Amino acid sequence: MNDDRGLCPSGWHLPSDDQWKVMEMARGMSEADANGTGWRGDAQNVGGQMKEADTAHWNSPNMGANNSSSFTGLDHGYRGTNGHFAVLLIDGYFWSLSPSGGDAWARILSYD
Image 1 (cartoon, one colour):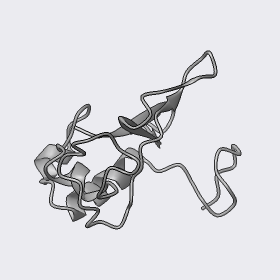
Image 2: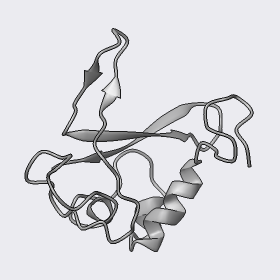
Image 3: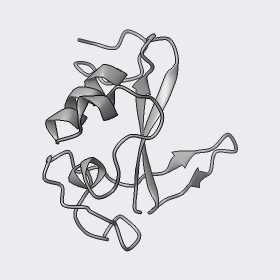
């Protein structure tokens, strides 16, 4: 599936919230946890499984990080409206679509 808005390279697409839930549940999050919105999981389980397993790109303690999912989430912060990057080494923001498909949501992995 291509992203016809030009947000992703050819052959790639912006993941939906449901696609994130599938990955979270494959890593052990219960369906009940994955049915809510807002914060889901914690650094000791799903989040840690999705993060690079050291502190080369994350602040210490990089809690729970073991990258057992092979997703290798990195901290890259976000680019603010002033053009500067913020929260480097602290959070990794990943774009996602809301359940309605119209709004952009962010998925965040954090060092703590």
